[in-house]
Image (cartoon, rainbow, N blue to C red):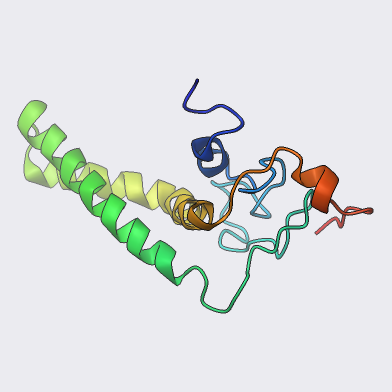
Length: 137
């Protein structure tokens, strides 16, 4: 079984797909688009899953982001400083550049991690819950 099989949680997270059907897009624009970069759809265009089940639902995703980005930053700087022999200044500069380019993707992945903790994948979700007419939004 591959890590990025369509029926795995990691597929939904890294491809930014709906956690229930793994078909619908969760965000309106691409990850490296800086237009509407934080705007999410209200519902899945394929299976009609409500992406905002309650006010403040994604508050927990900030904790997930904080934890995994803290470890990522430590490992990133440590790798370039100790294994590559770069100075701390260059290692931190590279980290800041990397994060400046990828901050939208990091935000989105954290939200996908959070919603995937609460929503189970259902291969037949589109048949069960799908819309009769798909909204363009």
